[in-house]
Image (cartoon, rainbow, N blue to C red; front, side, top):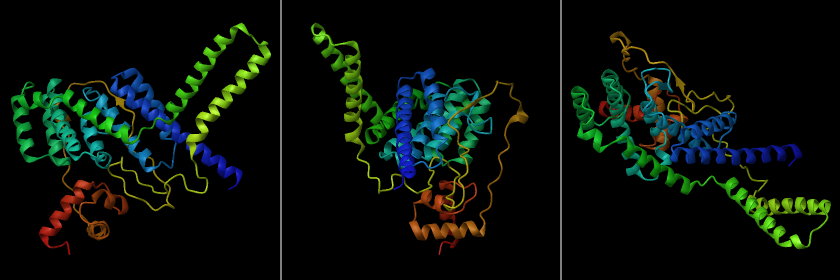
Length: 361
C-alpha cells in the first residue's frame, strides 16, 4: 500500500469517528430536549455527513435517524417544512422517513407502535393547533400516500369531523407517548451501535491527566526545574494518548474498511444506480426551512394527483426482483431495479394486484 492510499484510509477512519461522535451528540441533545444544542449538533453533523460521498451502510442508517429526529423535534411547529409541499407537516415527513428505518428497528412491535402513533399525531397536532382544515388535508394525504389501516382511518375521520382535541383516541395515543416510544428505539439502537469511541478515548486521556495532576501536587515538596517539568509533562501526554488510542484501533490495512455498496435506505424514492454512474445528491435534507404563517383559503387546498399507471417495464422489473429476492423484500427490489418515484409499499400493492390479475407468473 502506497503512502497516499494509507493516508486516505486514515482520513476516512478519522471522519467515521467524527461522524459517530456528532451522531451521539445529536441523540444526547434530543433526549435532553435541548433545542438550542440539538440544532447546533444537527448542523455540525449535516455539514460532515453531506460532504462524504461514500457512506457505509450503518452511517446511512444513522443519517436517516438524524433526519427522523429533526422532524420529530419540530413535530408541533406547523410553520416548519422539510418537503417542497408546504402542506406536508414535519410529522407527515417523519412518517415517510420512519418507514425507511424498518430494518433499523429490531423490535417489530415497537416499529408498528411508533408508526401507529405517527398516524394519529399527524392529525392530532393539526387539531391541537386549531387548524381543522389542515387536519382534514392531512388525513387525505395519509389515505393516499401511506398504508393507513381502514379501522384507524374511520376513527380519525370521526375525530376530524367532531374537531375534538380531547377525543379518547388522541389522549390515549398522545404526543408524549410517541416521544417515549422513540426514546426506547434510540436506547436500543445506541446499545447495538454505541458510536462512542472518541468519547471513551477522550475520557481516558482526561483521567490520565487528572492522575498526573494529583501526582504533581503530592510531589510539590520535591520540585523539578520548570523546563524539565514541561518536557516530562509533554512526553507523558503523548504516551498517555498513544496508550489510549493505539490498542483499540485493530485496523487491518489489507482489508477494505468500507463497503462498496451504494445503498441509501434513508431516501424513500431512491433506486440503486450502477457503480460507474456518479451518485446524485439526496433530496431528503436533515435541515429544515421555515415560512411565515398565512391565512388559508379554500383554493390553497392541494389537489392530489391520480395514481400513475404501472408501465410494462416496471412490471417486468418487479417480477425480476421477486424472482431474485423473493416476496417481502420490497426495499431491496426498489434499490436494485428502476422504479421512478415508487415506494416499497407501492411495490407490495402492485404485486398483490398482479397476482389477482394473473400477471404474476
